Image (cartoon, rainbow, N blue to C red; front, side, top):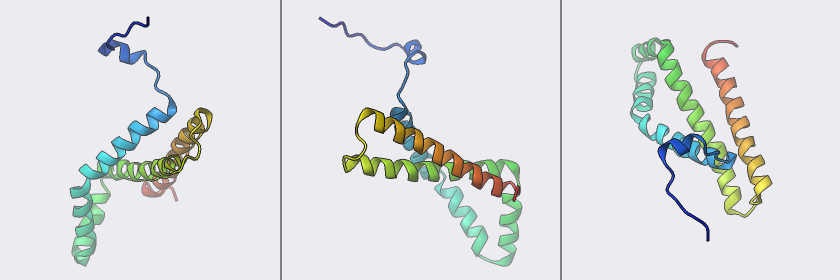
Length: 128
Protein backbone atom coordinates (compact mmCIF):
# COMPACT_ATOMS: atom_id res chain seq x y z
CA UNK A 1 0.00 0.00 0.00
CA UNK A 2 1.56 3.37 -0.98
CA UNK A 3 2.06 5.91 1.75
CA UNK A 4 0.83 9.42 1.03
CA UNK A 5 2.03 12.36 3.04
CA UNK A 6 1.73 16.10 2.76
CA UNK A 7 4.59 18.02 1.20
CA UNK A 8 6.30 20.31 3.65
CA UNK A 9 7.52 23.77 2.66
CA UNK A 10 11.14 22.63 2.85
CA UNK A 11 10.36 19.72 0.50
CA UNK A 12 9.44 22.17 -2.25
CA UNK A 13 13.09 23.08 -2.74
CA UNK A 14 13.89 19.44 -3.59
CA UNK A 15 10.91 18.92 -5.88
CA UNK A 16 11.84 19.04 -9.59
CA UNK A 17 9.06 20.46 -11.71
CA UNK A 18 9.10 19.40 -15.39
CA UNK A 19 9.59 22.03 -18.09
CA UNK A 20 5.90 21.91 -18.98
CA UNK A 21 5.00 22.75 -15.39
CA UNK A 22 7.45 25.65 -15.32
CA UNK A 23 6.01 27.05 -18.56
CA UNK A 24 2.50 26.68 -17.16
CA UNK A 25 3.40 28.59 -14.00
CA UNK A 26 5.20 31.29 -16.00
CA UNK A 27 2.13 31.55 -18.27
CA UNK A 28 0.03 32.39 -15.22
CA UNK A 29 2.67 34.79 -13.86
CA UNK A 30 2.93 36.60 -17.20
CA UNK A 31 -0.85 36.92 -17.42
CA UNK A 32 -1.03 38.34 -13.91
CA UNK A 33 1.84 40.73 -14.64
CA UNK A 34 0.14 42.03 -17.76
CA UNK A 35 -3.12 42.48 -15.85
CA UNK A 36 -1.44 44.33 -12.97
CA UNK A 37 0.46 46.64 -15.33
CA UNK A 38 -2.64 47.77 -17.25
CA UNK A 39 -2.74 51.16 -15.42
CA UNK A 40 0.95 51.72 -16.22
CA UNK A 41 0.40 50.90 -19.91
CA UNK A 42 -2.63 53.16 -20.09
CA UNK A 43 -0.62 55.98 -18.48
CA UNK A 44 2.20 55.55 -21.01
CA UNK A 45 -0.25 55.37 -23.90
CA UNK A 46 -2.03 58.51 -22.70
CA UNK A 47 1.29 60.37 -22.43
CA UNK A 48 2.36 59.26 -25.88
CA UNK A 49 -0.71 60.33 -27.87
CA UNK A 50 -2.30 63.31 -26.10
CA UNK A 51 -0.08 66.10 -27.42
CA UNK A 52 3.47 66.91 -28.42
CA UNK A 53 4.24 68.15 -24.90
CA UNK A 54 2.92 64.93 -23.34
CA UNK A 55 4.98 62.92 -25.84
CA UNK A 56 8.09 64.70 -24.53
CA UNK A 57 6.96 63.71 -21.03
CA UNK A 58 6.54 60.14 -22.29
CA UNK A 59 10.08 60.11 -23.68
CA UNK A 60 11.42 61.52 -20.40
CA UNK A 61 9.61 58.89 -18.33
CA UNK A 62 10.73 56.10 -20.64
CA UNK A 63 14.36 57.25 -20.47
CA UNK A 64 14.57 56.25 -16.79
CA UNK A 65 16.37 52.86 -16.39
CA UNK A 66 13.85 51.50 -13.86
CA UNK A 67 10.95 52.28 -16.19
CA UNK A 68 12.82 50.55 -19.00
CA UNK A 69 13.11 47.45 -16.79
CA UNK A 70 9.37 47.58 -16.09
CA UNK A 71 8.66 47.90 -19.81
CA UNK A 72 11.06 45.00 -20.47
CA UNK A 73 9.19 42.88 -17.91
CA UNK A 74 5.97 43.74 -19.69
CA UNK A 75 7.50 42.82 -23.05
CA UNK A 76 8.65 39.47 -21.64
CA UNK A 77 5.21 38.86 -20.13
CA UNK A 78 3.48 39.50 -23.45
CA UNK A 79 5.91 37.41 -25.50
CA UNK A 80 5.92 34.50 -23.08
CA UNK A 81 2.14 34.58 -22.68
CA UNK A 82 1.71 34.65 -26.46
CA UNK A 83 4.14 31.78 -27.13
CA UNK A 84 2.81 29.65 -24.27
CA UNK A 85 -0.74 30.38 -25.37
CA UNK A 86 0.00 29.00 -28.83
CA UNK A 87 1.53 25.92 -27.18
CA UNK A 88 -1.57 25.42 -25.04
CA UNK A 89 -3.86 25.85 -28.05
CA UNK A 90 -1.91 23.12 -29.86
CA UNK A 91 -2.18 20.90 -26.78
CA UNK A 92 -5.95 21.50 -26.78
CA UNK A 93 -5.97 20.22 -30.36
CA UNK A 94 -4.15 17.08 -29.11
CA UNK A 95 -0.95 17.96 -30.91
CA UNK A 96 2.27 17.23 -29.05
CA UNK A 97 0.68 15.71 -25.98
CA UNK A 98 3.21 12.94 -25.52
CA UNK A 99 5.69 13.48 -22.72
CA UNK A 100 8.79 14.05 -24.92
CA UNK A 101 6.93 16.31 -27.35
CA UNK A 102 5.45 18.29 -24.48
CA UNK A 103 8.87 18.78 -22.91
CA UNK A 104 10.34 19.89 -26.25
CA UNK A 105 7.55 22.38 -26.88
CA UNK A 106 7.90 23.77 -23.35
CA UNK A 107 11.64 24.32 -23.80
CA UNK A 108 10.91 25.80 -27.23
CA UNK A 109 8.49 28.29 -25.68
CA UNK A 110 11.11 29.36 -23.15
CA UNK A 111 13.85 29.69 -25.78
CA UNK A 112 11.71 31.61 -28.27
CA UNK A 113 10.20 33.98 -25.72
CA UNK A 114 13.57 34.73 -24.10
CA UNK A 115 15.28 35.21 -27.48
CA UNK A 116 12.58 37.62 -28.64
CA UNK A 117 12.78 39.43 -25.31
CA UNK A 118 16.54 39.80 -25.78
CA UNK A 119 15.98 41.36 -29.22
CA UNK A 120 13.44 43.82 -27.82
CA UNK A 121 15.75 44.57 -24.87
CA UNK A 122 18.58 45.40 -27.25
CA UNK A 123 16.28 47.81 -29.10
CA UNK A 124 14.87 49.27 -25.88
CA UNK A 125 18.30 49.98 -24.42
CA UNK A 126 19.58 51.45 -27.68
CA UNK A 127 22.02 48.76 -28.87
CA UNK A 128 20.73 49.13 -32.44
